[in-house]
Image (cartoon, rainbow, N blue to C red):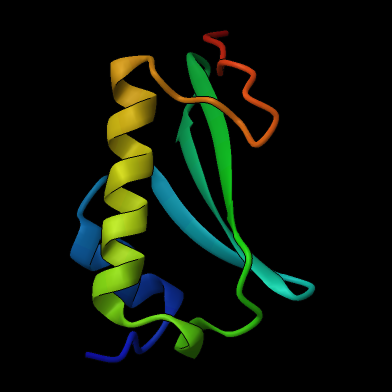
Length: 83
């Protein structure tokens, strides 16, 4: 199934702390439970249509699970932090 928009992806995932944004040549999820936690996760595809809705949902849910369990590591392997 095709993702209609970033809002569509986030709505299907159903986590109130999650958002999805485009940037130049990639997309990124943010997990914002301010002031406690703020984390990001890049998805290196230039267009939303480069992945199916299911792939976006799997990626977003995995990111949420990792952040919420305290097991999130950024691209350099550095553990996320609580503020």
